Image (cartoon, rainbow, N blue to C red; front, top):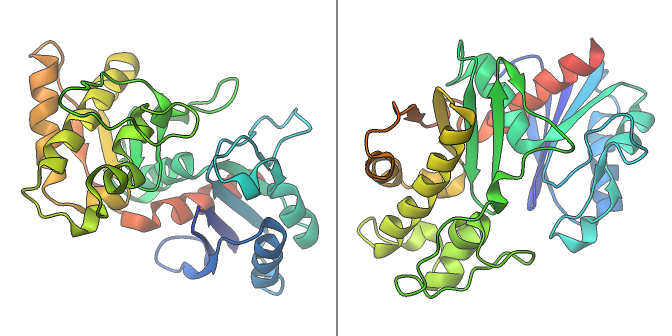
Length: 281
C-alpha cells in the first residue's frame, strides 16, 4: 500500500492505495508549513504504507545528490519558501519518499492510467492558480539542472490589445502572469468560473495558451498535449486553443492531439502513487 500527497497552494490532497480505483483521499488545508506537515504525517501514521510519493507545487529541489533535495525553494508562497517537505515526512514514517513537481506527478498519473497511456512523448500542462508543465520524452519525465518551469516562459504580449501588466511576482507578464487563474481574475475583476462562455477573456486566454503550446511542441515535438487545471474546466476553452494553435503553426507542423486529462483533478495525487512505487524500487 502506498501513500500519495499532492501538495497544492490551497490544499494538500493525501491518499492511500495502489491505483485510482482503490485510492482513498482526504484534503488538508495548506496552512503554516509546520502545522500542515504534521497533519500529513498524522494522516499516514497508522496506515502501514510502504512508501510515500509527493507531487508538490514548486519550484522544488529534485536532485538527490543535493543537501536541498526535498525542499520547496523559491516559491511565491512566502511562508513555504525554503521549506523541507519530503525529508520530515519520510523520517517520521520511516519509509522511502518519491518527490517531484505536482505537474510531473500528474504526467506520470496520466501515463499510467489516463490520457497518455501508450504515448512515449507528451506534455501535461496545468492552468489554475499557477501554470506548470511536465514533459515526458522517450517515456521518461524530463529533468535537468532542476525541473521545467513552463509557466514562466515569455509569450508575445500585445500591450494595445491587453494592457494588463501581469501578476507574476517574479516576471510580471510571463505566461503565468498573463494566463493563470489569478491573472484572469485580476484583469477582469471576476474569477474565471464567473465569466460567461462568450466573454472576451476566453479568446485572449486561448491566444496565450496556444502561443505557449506552440513553443513547447516546436521544442519537444510532443505527440500529445494534455491540458488540465481549474481554468481548463471552461469547456469552450479547449476548442478555442485548438483553433488558435492551428492558425499559429500555419500548417508547418503536424499538430499533436490536444486533450483533457482522463484522471481530471486527481491526476496529481494518482501520479504520486507512481512516485511512491518508484521510491520503493
